[in-house]
Amino acid sequence: MAINNTHIILFQVAMFSMVSSCIKPFENVEDYLPVVSMDSVVINDDGNISLYGHILDEGFTDIQHAGFCYSENEEFSILENQLEVTTYGSFFKLELESAIFENNTVYYFNAWASNKQGYAKGEPISTADITNEVIAPCSFDTNYFYLDAFASSYNVYYASALNDAGGDWEITASVSGTLMSIHFRFSEEPSSGIYSSSGSTMFPSDPEKVYVSVTQGGPLFGYLQLNEKIYLNNYGDGSYSVTLCDAVLITTGFGETYHIDTYFLGPY
Image (cartoon, rainbow, N blue to C red):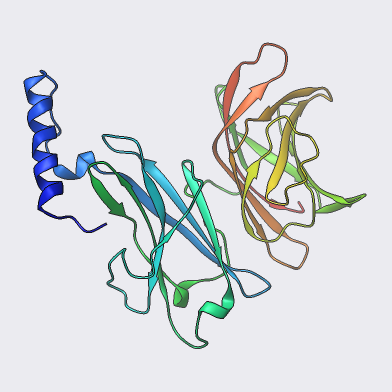
């Protein structure tokens, strides 16, 4: 991952090739590189640590590698305790066993990604700052709902308790002025974390997948496309929060797509 003279020469050749091909180059070297966010670090009930990263921009070429790194020092290289994920999209996740870490020691975690031009990293998160709360990359007023099919935003006026529905766990939230309700179905009782939507699969067996559907006046209106992100905090006292950030909704019938933003607390 270290940048050597060969990489610099290749980068200069790429720059020359772009200019000679009448393609306007970027003004800054950083514009060729990925943009990465270290979204959150969550300490699970079993003591294991879940890391969540986010590729905001791939840069000039496709992402080749992505992962995490950690250190006991606030300033550290991505080569230190470097961990690469084998599968990734815009969001990526890794879980580390608690046995790796010493008790009463502060650790710093960061996300990184690389393309053919080089690598980039996010801003580190310290275990000293962990609140066990999942922080979504978007923020809205409480009980906010927006669907770009409508001209304005609306309020979530009802959010059910987290219900055990015969083995599956469900949340239903209803939106004022639209006759719409959002339904979340988990395969087991969810803990705090970042989940992925299961697309059209109504009963996902993967505990990290959630079936998210929207009804309007009763009939199904649509469902979140595969691998949209659901940010959930389960506070352990029956209360929870759910956030969706520009999540893509596929409508039934015509297959049109819309985008949902929402943040609500439940039960409400």
